[in-house]
Amino acid sequence: MKVRLVPYSDSLKESLFAFTAGCFEELGKKFEPDGRHGFYNDIENEFDVFYCLVLDEEVIGTVGLKKVDVRAAGKKIDEGAIDLKNDECAVGPKQTGARAVELKAMYLDRSYRGKGYGRMLMDKAVEEAKRLGYECIVLDSMSKYEDALRLYGKTGFRRIERYNDNVHADVFMRLDL
Image (tube, rainbow, N blue to C red):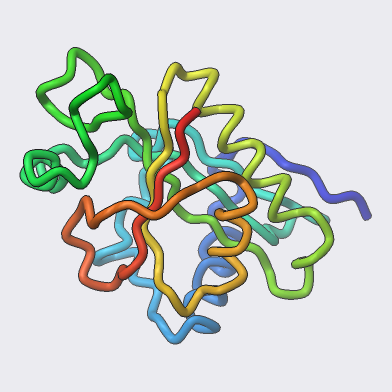
């Protein structure tokens, strides 16, 4: 029984959906792949990268990097949530290219926490963001996800102002690469 970190492929879709539904249920949320979580049906096009932590062909963890939705973030940029001045990491149409990417789908089965797998997922996300030429990673989360917030802090993420319209999020963070 070896845990492997592998790029997403369609052969993992059923396991991914079951895993994600379980994670959402544990968090008191509902996984809606035919609704607001529809992007899970087209991972290859919706994410820059998406990795699954797999044990015996079952998904036990995930992490993805997704281009920031500049339509949603654009007005927040002008309000200073992600500063365009001083060459800081910026998001949006004023840039010649996207310099920020968003951490998404960072989930780990509860029984595998505290064993270094969360760090493995995070390290892969940071490595891939650097490889793709991004200058920072942003994320949104909820303050009740204390384990995740601790991992983000240990990785070097710092709190920033709201940069999107996600009504479920109350924590916004950035990691400069």
